[in-house]
Image 1 (tube, rainbow, N blue to C red):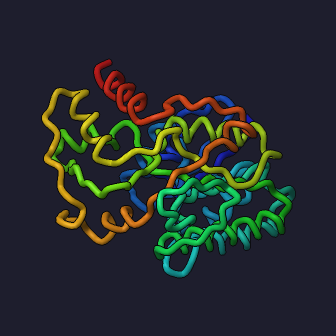
Image 2 (image 1 turned 45 degrees about the vertical axis):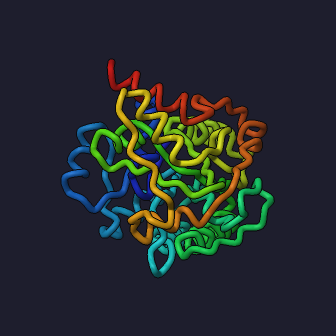
Length: 289
């Protein structure tokens, strides 16, 4: 065992990546402040790190051969950047790979046009601005220490336990219609395979859009999920009449098509789930096993 992955933030994507790695080849550290989650991580063979324990965090940052950053930026910036800056002096060699999970929200509003990795990032929402600042900060740090870094700009994430089928079954699904509005999505298992491909080829660093092949209106996804499980879909609600939280409403301000060709060409990726239909059908089939 000679590879150590440190996940700064151990959420949906990090857990899926960790679970897909060969446990005989990898040690996995994951940060969490939750005592119950720490116990659960230990039970799965992972090593929890309390980010409030500076010594433990510094040790993990020093030992990690691979670092994945998925934690959201805080008001003061990225919550782990300062610790990583300090830890670099204690490392004999730089990490073999650093990955930063960002969002396609950094592109801002494009009025339904196609964006690729060369499209200027002009976020309009505060969370998009914070993500872009964190991207730039980690890119600068990686350059200082001589480590390859890839930024993964993720579209809307879904997967087992987090999808339109679950929303329908729990009664939280809404079929909101805003004419012309489309989103790309990405299945969490495709995120995991893209991260593994990047880890295997760290020299192919840079920025990657991580999205499926088919941008679609959100109401169509709900209707398809309802048909899959034999439920009547919720009624369509015009966007102007929808009772949405400020956070939910903000997602409808960004309307774009995501070009995902770079991740296929540079990392040799064939998407497991190129559209939401394939992804939802697989989730339903998995739930019946």
